[in-house]
Length: 350
Image 1 (cartoon, rainbow, N blue to C red):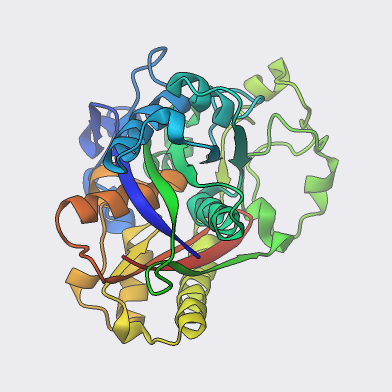
Image 2 (cartoon, rainbow, N blue to C red; image 1 turned 45 degrees about the vertical axis):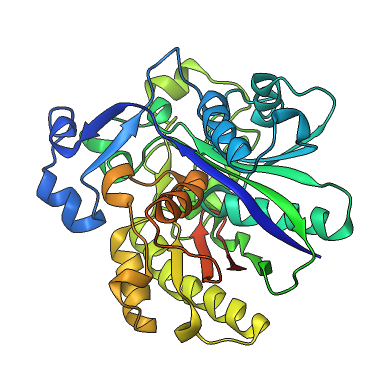
């Protein structure tokens, strides 16, 4: 059996935050942001009213309805996010509560930008073994609650946005349809080049030994709990070595796509639609150039939503499908690279 996408949906907050709005908070320009990332605007939640799990619930309701099911038909949830509502428990159980489903299992996936690829791969295995029939797979993020909106943090903060996407996976006996293959990879050697250090249990001392790490704050502030010293020294924001991440992304993205093609016996020319993780438009353009994909065979929406991490692929996949750009029988490739470093791809016959 293969797992097919029986229903798909996405949801983004109403509030649109343009580049111009960010120029009032930090020393930047819209032209600077567009040139480096391709992003023109992004969505932010309404504080104290919307959370990662509430965004996920809205996307999930759409996916479930399109699958012709009710929430009670879902028998497992896989939830991918790096920005959960709470440190613990995970957001999967909160989504379960929002949907009014009791007793089913929930699994949270923490592989950041590749979260949806990892999540859909896990769900695919459960479907193949017959363990579950209807699995809800979600990627959702609320980045706006944890960014540094000053000039110091602009290289990271201008990139990210909030949103959620969801699919319902079901078994199909048609072996030519559904998820044909997935591949998952990681290399923890580079973990600190894209990371959120504090609060955490590392204690901070090991960061001093990480060669080439350009960490802007004192590395001895680490601890499980947020401290006043962390706040005073502003050691509570994401760290990204942008050039280093870019260098590895343009290598690993194509490798994952080529591996997926080899697994199903096709070439990149056979791919009807590539849905890349919306990390940076410049990365996607380099991948597109490498494979010779025409514009209509690569879907980008980072211009409107920014980088929504685990949510970016399901949002883009759903939007492309809603626009009629993905049709029955199309070969669709999903690919991602991100923090960890982690990377991977999935090949789907729609």
